[in-house]
Length: 132
Length: 343
Image (cartoon, rainbow over all chains, first blue to last red; front, side, top):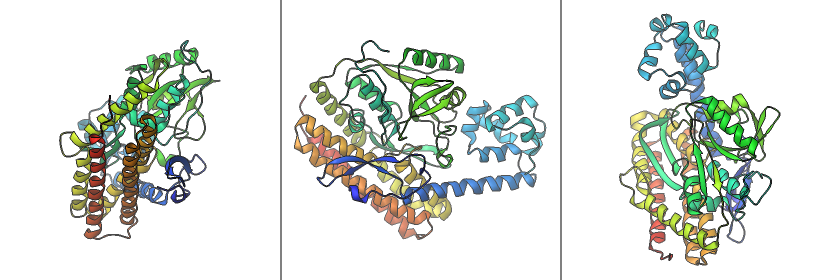
């Protein structure tokens, strides 16, 4: 990439930092230059976040309709999947899948719920009483 | 402070990629002033491609454009004869105590961290990606002084925040991973030249001879084959999210990006000067070309996730672009493997 072609499209990083890029100068030699961002990257990031927000909204509805437990909602809210949540709670994915059912969730001890609350960064009260 | 070190104060170095940056800044701190990001990347044989089978990251395909986390630091130090210390912990308190001891001794250390809870990162970048690297180089009041190579300036983290990111969970969990050069002796130009040759040879091997069809240059073809099927198999929406993920893996900070093809081109240019061998700067052009082609493919992929390109023929065109990139990279590495670099 030539130095003059380095994009300077303001993105999510604006005001935080600029990125170092390796570009060719007029002499055809490599040097570093700073970029504010690139529209192509920004849109990739935006579409990833659109997807995340959609998943969170779907999860909220599923909890409101009594189809899923609050664990499902907070898992999506914190961008977690089963392996990540399993890491933070110490529960095996198989058990987490069970805890996504409202009927199973209702019977969970406070001790187990506390592990989920800590992983999600919410209080036990918030986790138990999330209604969607 | 390390008695052997010839420098005094830690200087922040901003780089395109975090692990190169940590390697460069720590080695420079220990007196190896010649160290640059491209050199660290090349000595560490950093260029790679892999689509990891059966693994998804953030609900998309797991693709990496560089070698595995930790390898660049390890290989670069080894080739320069630098002894390193690395530690992982199962216990948070022990990890904190070890870090505090190093900070008290005034030794800057590299830490592997997860970005999800990294408070100084913009929220938009915080996914569960656990192979980010930063340097802790001091303490001020109750905050650690942090040099994060992707940031323009140094920053800080509280004790609780730092422990949290050092013990992030999920794939590639850092487990408090901490690493630093232990003993650094002066390095001769001859050692650097030997390291360059070794780094190039290893990179040739990784890209051309790795078994299986999902890694090295063949891995690019493997992904191209997937892309052709994604629209029918996954539906347009999911397929376009997958393409977005490829672009982010390729380009974005926080997920590992760094324009690695340009970086390798810059390395070969530097290597050409060390080796006094113009053939290396000729091959450097091939990697510049590959980098430009990756960017062109990203622009095409953006057309899909922006919803402007929706046909199967668009997916086929993207796949064809990747096939072309594979050809360029394969030829470039074949040229490198044919060079008789001596040693």
